[in-house]
Length: 111
Ligand SMILES: [Zn+2]
Image (cartoon, rainbow, N blue to C red; front, top):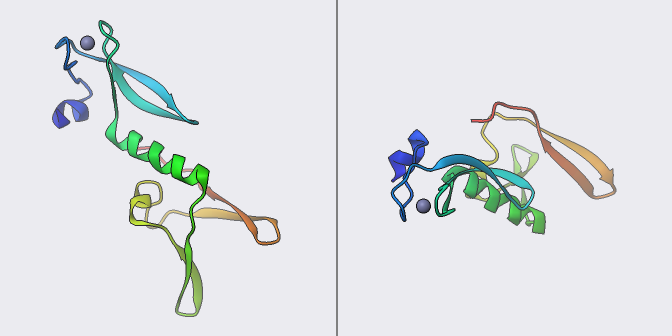
């Protein structure tokens, strides 16, 4: 099953037919998925589904703790966020109001 997903040709568990790649909107983001043209069964791309879950969490808002490393403050994200943020990437932080910042992940290749 996992191998089928990686190769992008999953088989419908109900009708045993090859499923077609589609895009599904989950909340505000597009998720890669496959759909059976016969019965309508859908499978989400596991990585995209995980990202969509993290985005849903972020929409509600998460609390991050500030730490200090070599006298420099940092905020640390929970482990799961390594799916959204990678080591070495850059983000832009813009002040919006006193105590409010907007964080944007800079352009990068989508895997
Ligand atoms: Zn089917």
